[in-house]
Image (spheres, rainbow, N blue to C red):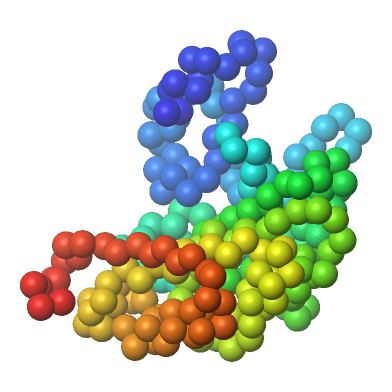
Length: 239
């Protein structure tokens, strides 16, 4: 993919590579595209021009016209199967006011839009800032904003529902207000408590079932999806 993008770019453009893989195997990128500029997440957070030095909330518009805003970097989990904590570097949340102003400015120019909040671990949002900001704060602000738009949170790890007991209620409020899209992904990864422990996931099968039951009780229209890893080392037919 990196090589294909490099072949199709304008000769005068600068080719910048960032992301998880860069932190895991930067030598491979340099081998494929020697002229690429390798940029860490910290460097990406501030783009410098000739006269400005402005922090930005990274985002892009996908093929369906949805604005995807990357509101945080990094993951609070230490799952044994995942390389993201090693590749992404320190956890970082973009300031709440910056995220909100980005939403407001975009919606004013693009009424009727859908904005999707993305990140490696959305539920972690705000905790690194140590100013009281959490994912609850962000969702409450978004629900109360004026304007014609929908907000979507694509994936939420189960352990955040255990930490934030009001999280389902915030989603319910947003769905009732027709502000939050009634869809959410909650990755299970395994239905076996033994395998979940091996994976270093921070919940049990019973925890997961209670979370799903609570969501269906409070938000009957909520569509849910999940992810399951099959064939994890040590997994048995019983698991």
